[in-house]
Image 1: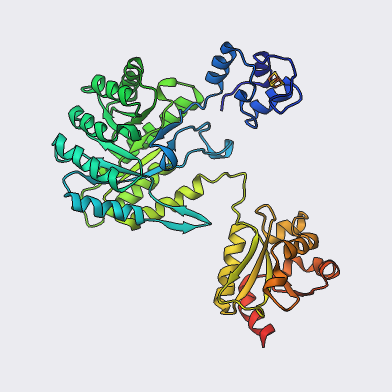
Image 2: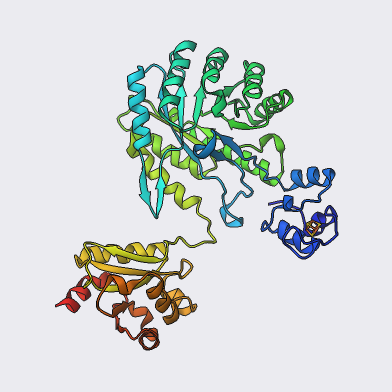
Length: 454
Ligand code: SF4
């Protein structure tokens, strides 16, 4: 990742050490900007020249592009590294369901409803589709516009308008242009008109060029000359290997070479890899989509709305776009598991997500309704947090008070993990509660909980 050195940033700052940016000196501000901890525009006294230079130099090499408006808007791009371990990936791949304008208005409404209802909860996050792609398969501009109208009246999800027909795109933009849909797509034949439409309606524009990356760069340059700022790249799809090669090359050129013409998010249509008549078409489409998601597609468009296909992709995306420097965690607090009462046992664990969900499912398997007090260990497991001084008697005592455990149970007994046995004495001292040391492995909770209740 190329960026500016602190001294290069410092040289462009006013050097008055006024402190208004929240840092005592311009130099310390420069160091924090360079390490990504501060926004350079927090300095209110930058000259116009410094703003321009710093803005250009510090912008992510892949432009952040927004599709849609308000809360439902989707941001793609904004990436700074080729490999996640170098920093993190910033914008999760947006996943779209594609529907065709050949469907009747009623069918379109049904499909939109299905997309709206496709949602899954995992690791305290709601996973769902991000976009709807409307395919102009009818070839009829009026029908395309009417289908656009039906969709925007029934959802706030951002749209991708898919047609190479400039009249169809224009008629659709008249209906939804203010909602900032992604125009798909400009190619070598229609680029000028599509680019003008994108500028007029202030919408992002996809540039489609399957031939080669040089030709793609030429089209990008032409679109920029017309005034298009927000661009999405489509390299087409002949075969998976070729598409992946192009996506990886674009990412490398944009980030490692700072080649501006490739510094945009990308879109891919994995359904083009399969024959609809294939009985395993859905399976192959998801498999190809997963490969594209792993190798830098910023937007993946799935055919149709069958909800099951999106789940593996959402789970994969959740893993890839998690910050590798932050352990997955759940919110600290007191969780009721099962039909609890004031006599239910109360156990303690860490807020590392995997630990929490494992302990929770082991308690559920025991069929003993219980309270689970989750303390903030900064996402570390019990073993690591005990060793690192983050799973302590003091923290548990504080959590008992903070989450009002005494109001939930009438007993004064708490069960700590076997791996934290060494804090039991201190915890008893601090709380005057009876401390029971549970098993080291939560899979033994089933037997353990039944035993202490017998
Ligand atoms: S606000 Fe600007 S001039 Fe003032 S200390 Fe910060 S960087 Fe320096």
